[in-house]
Length: 488
Image (cartoon, rainbow, N blue to C red; front, side, top):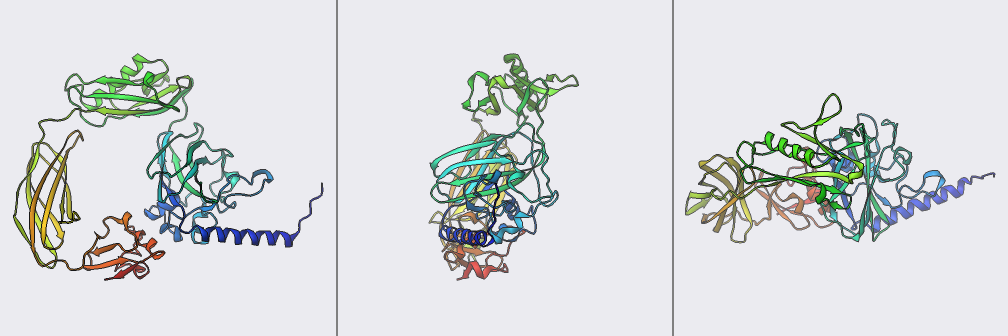
């Protein structure tokens, strides 16, 4: 059959499509926004300073890749839907076109050491999700060619049903990477929005270091990593999970009977040995030269046969309370005098365990006005907080957690601040609370002792665009500060 190509019709159709795309995007500027957070999308890695020369993507990772839903339609002559080939990473937005650059060395690779992976998204404006899909590059793909549909497998290796409900930031999408994929790969993560015509296409550049399937049908599904010293009476459980949820039949638990068993190397060995004694379709240990899996006093890998149905293991520590642990504030001044709104609040504390401690001073409106954290040894310790506040009653809250995480203690004391206040009220001291900045948020810039207010929408979107390496919108000192902030 002879096909006739009408250049004018094609140009008209192309122009109409671009007008439609522009109209759609304009109507959705206050619509859904979000990005792949774990592993980091290419754009988020730009914002973190891991990638360079990223254009506008480093300021708006939440907007990258928004275009029509429907991927991978367009393969094999089908009508094109979703992003255009060669512009999959940017979604076709000129502001984010740097994301479409592709070479073997262009982007930072996130190392993936376990095929059982929990994908996580961050939603800055959540809208209902019909599904999340994850595609991976085909065998033999060329990392020096632009990303096209033909670059990726035609079907996703993992699909999460969204139920047309609002997705939750940080929710884990548990997936298993294909056993034959290793080394440099690109993962295409797609969030399909339920109440618009859009989807978000995020690419993540990864280096898969996880072991391939073993001979004899064994597949890696996790590991037992010695992590902390346990006490007599504590428990350790290897929790098995299938595609349907936790599997009690393949979960294994041990108890710590004495101090020697509680050392990390020893309890890891005991748990691995118990797993091998309990199951024939699960093995824990390290492979020897003959391919046998033998427990060791160290990190033990976990392997399963397919018929077990197990896709991953999680190690859960059941640690009892350390009832004898205590911590308290032992001395502080009844009054601290502010000078131009500043004062150093010094106090002493004591603990009978080594702890990670956090001290926060709250004003009478329960706003934090000073904080510090430290790891302290058993005994007495002096701490201080740099405070910016106004006169009035204040509350010092000290929270300490033992280094093994099993016990938390808290002490609270009141004190008075007098003297000269800070003047203009503010919500945060920059860059504290960065993720909560929105129109009207007032922040104190400690470098200049000035207060700035975040401008109204749409400029307010720039107020959160800050990293130590991309600080153009830092209030008062960044080159583009005037675009986002108003000095008070």
